[in-house]
Each structure stands twice: as structure tokens, then as C-alpha cells.
Image (cartoon, rainbow, N blue to C red; front, side):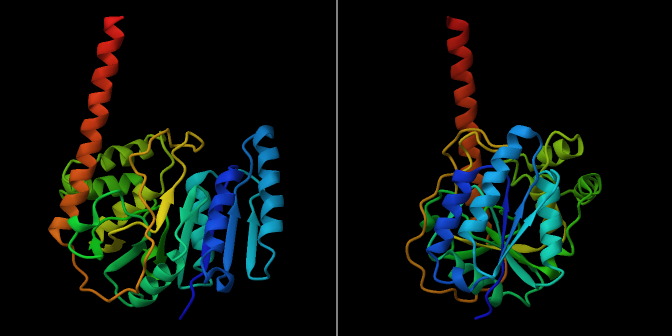
Amino acid sequence: MHISPIIIFTYNRLNHLDTLIQSLQKNVLFEKSKVIVFSDGPKNEIKKKKIKKIRIYLKKKLISSNCEIIERSSNYGLSKNIIDGINHTFKKYDQAIILEDDLEVSPIFLNYMNDALNLYASSKNVASISGYMYPIDKLRFSNNFFFLNLIESWGWGTWSRSWKLFQSNSIRLKQSILDNKLKKKFNLNNSFNYFKILDDNIQKRNDSWAVRWYATVLLNNMLTLFPSKSFVLNKGFDNSGTHCGITNVYESNLIKLYKGLPKIEVYENPNDRLQLEIFFKKIKYKNLFRRVLRFFFNISK
């Protein structure tokens, strides 16, 4: 088996990073994996102390010669750190597994990711591999694994052949989506407003690299392999991250059993896409109901 390098991006959340590293160490392939950590630099003196602790921790925890820690001397910010880190990695490697520090992975995560990256390495219409799946009943999907014209950035993998298509210019991406009449599809049949995230990126209201990667994949009509049960948990919705508040709506149960990955036909089943649309619409209506309740109680006081 060809074992892909693991890229880890971290800033100043030591507890989260420790959870991720410990979960990776439960994977039998971890010790055989090249690990490259990109530690972003501090924004201020308070963050400087936290980042110093992060780097001391990394040097103690990742002592193998197969581990490389790249310490940014200044603050790159989320997007620049990730985009530059992936570009740096693909100068040497053809494929990679990509993780941010607020994730926890299954003990069989690396088996699945490596199987998938190796299996679809030459499939030009496959853009990436997702390790995460939303908390949706697996029986609703067409298969244990399936393809979507979508991406997921919470524990994923890709190849240099796909990443070289990445378009960082949000203005161009927005115009291409409009020119190709893909706004509704981009928004998952208007169940989730990715277009607003892209527009906010243009207006400098967010620093999302992921929405640009999704737009790139959509415009190139490429697909991502998804599991019906998640190999990844996102632990960042505790108000500790730059763009994350507090919520548990994305909390999945980690998959416990993995029997290997059969190669399946590369196409998107409309039913699988529909299940995500239903999930996002439920969240939207739930959030609307909560806002109405808050408004009612506020005016009733």
C-alpha cells in the first residue's frame, strides 16, 4: 500500500490538537505515515504564548524522523496557511491527507483514506476524498460509499493533479458560477447558501479557502467520494475557532467497522445529493424557528 503523507494545520488550540494527535496515533498506519505540521504564527502577544506551547508540545509528541514541523514566523491566517501548506506538500508528493487541528478521527480513518486515494488516483473526474459525513441515517444513501459534486474540508484528501486546478480568485469563481447558471446547484438546491459565503469572501468578511475549493470542483464538474458514516468528528464548534460558534448539529458518530473499499462507478446519484439537501433544510428551519422564538420572548418581556 502506498501511504499518503498527512498534513496538519494548527494555530493556538492545544487541547484540540492533542485530541487530533491522540486519535491519529490509534491508527495502525500513523507510524508509517509522513507527517507535516504547519504551525501558524501569532497575531499578538497573547497568541504568542499559546503558540509557543503548541510548538513545544509538537516537538515532544512528534519525535519521529518522519515528522516535519514548519513554524510560521508571522501570522498567515487560515486560508494562506492551508493553501501555501498544500502547495508546499505537492511540490514533493502526489497525494495527501489534510487535517485541521479541531478534528478527531476514527482508528480506521487512515486505512480508508489511503485506500481511497490509491484506488482513485488515476480517475481524473474525482477531485477529492472526504472522511466526514453529516449525521444522516446511512440507510438513506445509495451505498456505503458514494460520489457527490461537492467537497468536504473536515478530514479530506486529494491529489496534486486535482489541486493544481484550485482557483483562488473568488471574483472569477463567482462570475463563472453566474455565467454557467450554477448558483442553485452551488447552493445545493438552495438548501445551504454557499454563494453568500463566496460573496462574503470577496467582501473580506470571511477567510474561507474551502468555498473556493468547492466552487473550483463544481465548475470542473468533478466529484468527491463520501462515506455513508463518518470517519471524522469536528470538535471545533465550541466557540474556540475563528469562524465557528457553538452547535452540535454537525456531530456524527464515528464509524467503528471498515471492511475495505470496493471501487464503484464514478457518478452522482441524485438521491444521495437529495439527502444532504434535506439535512441542510432541516437545519435552516430549525435555526429560523429558534430566531422566531427568541424574537417572541424578547418582545413579550
